[in-house]
Length: 229
Length: 229
Image 1 (cartoon, each protein chain N blue to C red):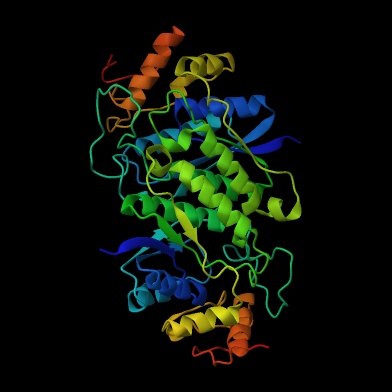
Image 2 (cartoon, helix red, strand yellow; image 1 turned 90 degrees about the horizontal axis):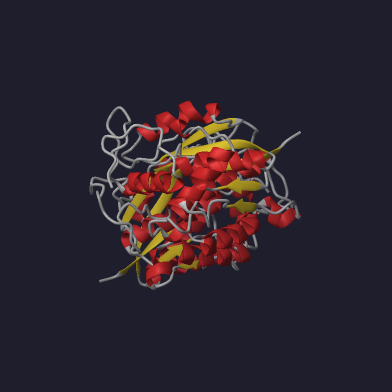
């Protein structure tokens, strides 16, 4: 019997690669997505469609409403920034405590599944300035998780939060995924797609993705409104 | 201007006391409740009604569906245990990663409010065996929170997770609340109330509450189906 791992899965390039790595590591991948009031909800439709096609053993979408807190361009009407150069301050697309919340749900599902492993495709190099994508955050979450749950009381296998992409450039992520057979047509990364789900080519996420494919020497197989440089 | 604190608020005795303590500490209390598929949803109706009456500056109810993960009597059809003696193993009313999830949302709201303080009414003495009510869990969460957020990157005031009840017996909690003017008629603790919201008097939560009032030498002002001993 395979071991189970919960894989945080947005439908994007990074999480699809992460799922392929989890499967290569010998896990059945239990994909977990969130409907969190994001403006780009087409992302979720794609995630539902693609999850089984890229090998998820099961897929759940948890509905949570982060909009009532506000505070982010991704969950309010602040407007997604375009054509900006990625830099070090925290952008307005940061959603307060998002990865903390996502990992907490993953922990809950893992505990029910009796899985001890959680995969999250965070990235510290191309991380756009989000504090909850840093290795020290992941390490602190893992420590907390092992005190939060039955494992901490009953001495079961401790939880491991796997971040296989954390030190990879976007180009390295893409090359890794291609080696593992990821079909990047079945991924979606744009923060501000058209109603039909065509990527804008100009938001932070598109710019990072396009740069990654360029540096990997591969043509990104998805469609864009414009391939911004 | 008062400082703001997010107070996790179930509508129960402990969280109502916790809110009174937060206000005594000089904070405006931003009460946060969850609709998490709990069988005792009458708890939420009471929480909505009582929050402003016990002094919340604002009150939000976040809907999250923990039922799709299952794994707890409080969010599934397993049945709430009755008349059991509280003991040390983890009961089936434990909801996987519940406090982790609740605190993560509190952290998100706190970040938006620019609040640095979160109150949670966990209790390590009468804690019914929940791993996520222990001081070592709270401490690990606080550490994680300060790495998850803007505070960790930008050097703002770090977050403090306040657990003013953690070392108090139920009787001491009740005496503290009475000293601060908490009207315990405006609280609701039962895991398995009648459709009209009358407490069963026999679940773990009722048994602890009744024992607390007994030990405090005060009559619990709410109604019960039966005052189980």
